[in-house]
Length: 331
Ligand SMILES: Cc1cc2nc3c(=O)[nH]c(=O)nc-3n(C[C@H](O)[C@H](O)[C@H](O)COP(=O)(O)OP(=O)(O)OC[C@H]3O[C@@H](n4cnc5c(N)ncnc54)[C@H](O)[C@@H]3O)c2cc1C
Image 1 (cartoon, helix red, strand yellow):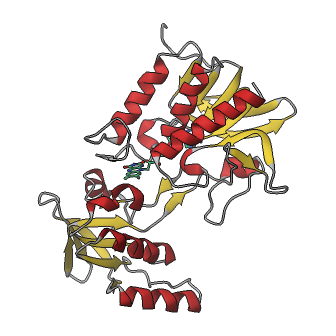
Image 2 (tube, rainbow, N blue to C red; image 1 turned 90 degrees about the vertical axis):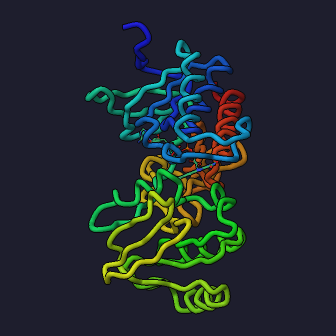
Image 3 (cartoon, helix red, strand yellow; image 1 turned 30 degrees about the vertical axis):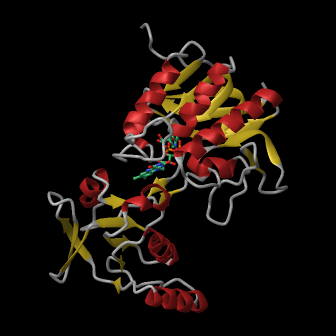
């Protein structure tokens, strides 16, 4: 079938994950005349897919949506289909290192396959945790899709000046998100724990310090269980509580952290992790060994999965560094 991607048994580079980082790594590999493959579950599993407008992407003065940008990156990669395969929807199950490089097992078209490579790039990203309301994560989706509820301080904080904001979460991360958002001068900030006790698993010293900071900043904590959301037509985030009360905000913000940090494959390859659970890398995006702290030969980690700032320009920069380093060293 013309144009249908073909999986080869071996490549110079295998890239796991086809978000902004992995797609850019594939493009760079093509431009450097290597044979590579991007193995991806597909764009709709990428973090930015539901971001309606991103304002920090160079070349887009009026902003660009996450899925439009992914489409453009997929199109750019498609021009080099002779050199770099884009295999989707595919799920990588495992990866191993041996004397010759790497071996990667994946599932594609309902079959298991194994491919080999000289160098391996991990670009699986992380997965945001969603609030569970009535036993389901779906109630939040409309508000998330319209960016009335946001997930990234660095991406969307600039949208908050003068607005009332409700922050979801019950732990230290949520408290810090709320305090960080003060920088963007919201008209008011509140924390919503959705029925969970606040800072329950936090040591007494940290708890006392955070409570004092929140009080000083006039950030109240509401612990009521959430029963549902309203206000989409008015572009508001109205939170209905199980006790029949409600609170309404201009914007919601997630302080829930990550549902998954996709740690399994990097851990199986001997990666070191930083204190927040991201893969530790050096300035060339090389993965550091959990045992020695030195780079694991031929193994790179790029984008959100790597220690860094979870931003698309950074995903691209880490991809550039990894592929250029691999080009100079292994390919
Ligand atoms: C609501 C929201 C708004 C945002 N707004 C901005 C913004 O305005 N500006 C900005 O710079 N950043 C923004 N971000 C952050 C941005 O989305 C991420 O920094 C970026 O997506 C990271 O790219 P990535 O390639 O590392 O990961 P992702 O884009 O998440 O891609 C990872 C890919 O790997 C795939 N994958 C994972 N595991 C496997 C596996 N085992 N096998 C095969 N494939 C796998 C996933 O399915 C996914 O497609 C936003 C994020 C969110 C959630």
